[in-house]
Amino acid sequence: MTKTDLVNYIAEETGLTKADATRALDATMSGIVEGLKSEGKVALTGFCTFATQHKEARQGRNPRTGEAVTIPARTAVTIKAGAKLKDAVN
Image (cartoon, rainbow, N blue to C red; front, side, top):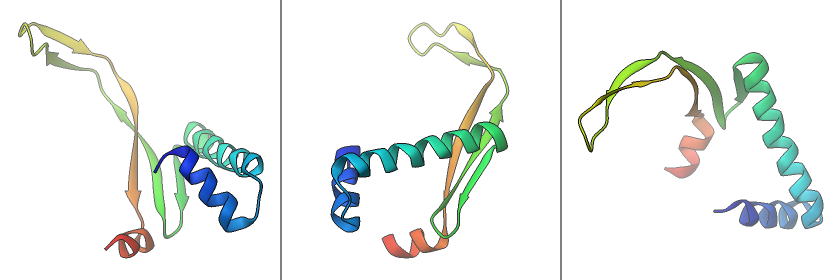
């Protein structure tokens, strides 16, 4: 499902216009990003939990040349499915 498909689904289910559904989806995604930036975790009970995880810098290898390269430190986002989501897809 693409973002457009999701917007169409939201519009049909809620009776919103596609423009309103797009704004609602964009606001939801922005809220998740802001929550991750400020608190490092966003929990949507029963659906999923988004969390940030710090990854230290490490040594890796260029698969083409075998040369050692340093992979810089970064913050990764993890997503853990909630019980209701797991039950819905199984």
